[in-house]
Image 1: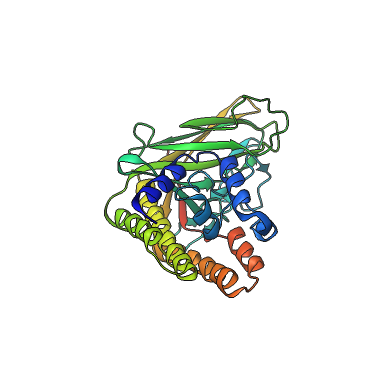
Image 2: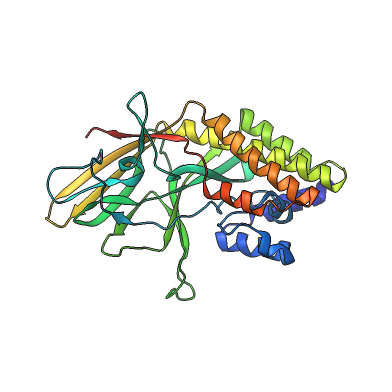
Length: 323
């Protein structure tokens, strides 16, 4: 691939913004392979090769949000009285030996998406399940704050998952530093990410350069694909590590209006587990190994790939802060 073609390739990637665009491009590239693609809102490495770098920047696995459930007995977040609430990622977290809680399921930080922009800027995001447990909740406002949030560099991204009733011209996605959820509606078909803008430096810059080189290097198709996939994984791992380090200075505040007229506030912090980089690298490596078997050797590994995509590792400890 010559420099001019490669520059056009990168420019095409930067123009991909919304999950719908990503999905449509992926489907058009894969054609007859549609039946083999994962059912979740995600793209395989082969699809990325067809669509371009950065195409997954806003295509993280988006979750159905705003499910308020009843707590289990012995819930660590239960408050006195009939009206109370807590973030499910915390309320159903797994207690660790040091007293911290491993965030429940894949509520946060299980799979990362990224896109490279101009001027060394780099966007990375991960899905955020806003589900809460509690009783008597009218509405909840979610807000990102703390020393790590400046000038919109850390924000929520949202997208409508259910397009029924949406008129032409209505917004189907966007970004914001805070949003409110009406809990009178048990299922709100909206997905949320936490996203941040970084400067691509150090290990992340080196990984991006290696990925660019992998795309530009002449080789046979099988070798190029594997080289690209491995390089792609390294970028994702470095991006996740940078994201996690920044999150150490970010606080998530939930303010609830309750049916008894009172209000309650919860503040949380998400810290990566000690071996988060290694866990995420191993997870992506498993997926890539299976995709290489499918694409190069012809082995049908779609079921195993889907299983991994549906069960990302828990990489964060969640702590409820005082005040």
